[in-house]
Figure 1 (cartoon, rainbow, N blue to C red):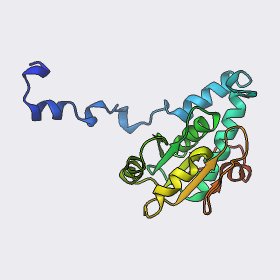
Figure 2: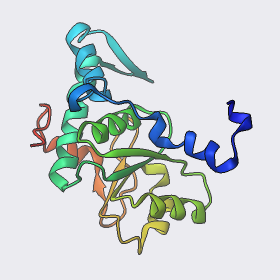
Figure 3: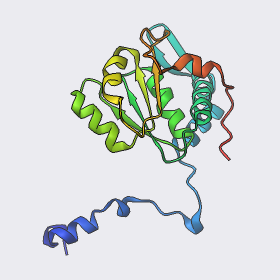
Length: 190
């Protein structure tokens, strides 16, 4: 029977998210996470160029160390496995660091377009039950306007691209200051 011959309910059931999950033998775990991939890259080509943004250049080892610092900071803030953390900004090394650091602690990163309408931004953050937002400083005031009153949101972290953030609203954390407090070792999550 083809998908076209199925009824609407049967087609939806067949196409559920559960059918996309990968099962592992005997309850094993995947070693194909973003963190595991990054670790393998660092083992094989630690000194190869990973990212270039303007005059900034990071090797894979440097990138991994920065990811670990941020991951340790997020973990120390109390962000837990399965909690959602939004990233609002555009193509930058900090965006990539944030994505990998959130993933490294088992939290779930999601992208938020800071150019969306205020209602759309508020809806996305509320719908995700986001516990934190990591935001490019250019959009900090916009995000600040919509997060007030969102009960799930505990942390607002602001980064500048290749510089200290120019706008860190009251109550927000400075990305660079947060990272500076932590070691570049992989976080101990257990």
